[in-house]
Amino acid sequence: MTSTLDVAKIRADFPILNRRVHDKPLVFLDSAASSQKPAVVIDAMDHYYRTSHANVHRGVHTLSEEATALYEGARRRIGKFINARSSREVIFTRNATESINLVAFTWGRANLRSGDEILLTESEHHSNIVPWQMLAKEVGAIVRYIPVDAQGYLDTSALDSMLTVKTKIVGIASMSNVLGTIMPIEEVTQRAHGVGALVLIDGAQGVPHLPTDVQAIGCDFLAFSGHKMCGPTGIGVLWGRRELLEAMPPFLGGGDMIRTVTYEGAEWNELPWKFEAGTPAIAESIGLGVAVDYLSALGMPAVRAHEREIIAYALDRLAEVPGLTLIGPDDPDRRGGVATFTLDDIHPHDLAAILDGEGIAIRAGHHCAMPLHRKLGLMASSRASFYIYSLPEEVDRLIEGLYKAKSIFKR
Image (tube, rainbow, N blue to C red; front, top):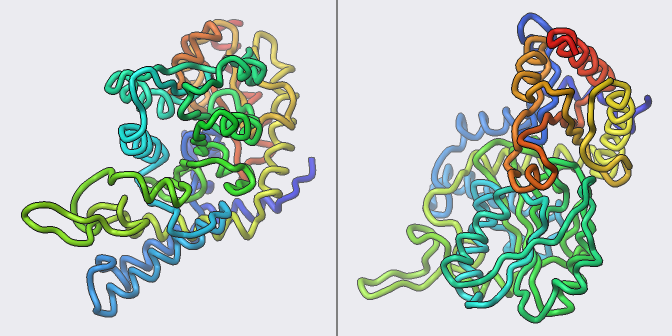
């Protein structure tokens, strides 16, 4: 298999890939949960702390100005990465979960009323379910779910009856974190707008792996996390259309999100700082900016092409294993770099423990998608996920580990 990326060169950029686990070379197949970090990201954060650390926006001294320039420079590059009209539309949060909560509890509280409907899909991550359930309970709105089939494909025909004038917002992941299914977000966005509903895209899986252009998609909000795209933990992004963000009330109150404060009240700061109360994650934002530079240099079309090749190879190899049941699309053109499966009656946690003994890291459990697992008749599943540093040889190591598990359990 010939990759569109120079994977050997990429792997040299990631220090952790030199690790040995249980005296075996690490095979990291858990990037859907959190990707590894290239040295340039680690070094950029270290350099900031060693040379330019100070609080942003609050000082005229040299260190504060340097920190502010780095922080806001990262925002501009992230905005360009997703083709935002303005960096003012890029809000720093802790992660995609906080970004979705921000929309639910600011836009949602201001705009949703009893009887209004929130439309999600059956394959959503808990982060794009629970905040809407909490809001619906508070205001009397109704949460409905667009069906997906066993491969995770969205039943777009159901939109004809489910999208109505009662629908106020549609929340959909661009890629399923369980099944890897790439969703038709442009079509959903266009049809939702046809009834006057807004659209929030959960891009936690999509943005790290697929070219993402918010203007081309036409959505109203996009949420994603830095730690899944070569960036640090503790930093995420909410992108929103400027006119919507301008009209929304703040999420948190405190320093930096205000213009003026008196004993009687306060006036809010302008975008994006209205939504960034308190001292932000400065080093993490800088790290995410460098991660975006790293991915941009590789080219997101090339990232997608490499993962398409890896997942196609993985699906073929996994299909060879007796007793293994693949979950999700069998078409690699419609699936991201995620291979989810069950193996005989071996519990996924037991399987993950055996594979760990072989130096192979996978994810086991419900992957923060319990409703989807129940729909599929599963309590848990095993998930191997790939990224820019994944090799076909690592898929082969996974297959060897699965056969070892079968021999241990005499399957």
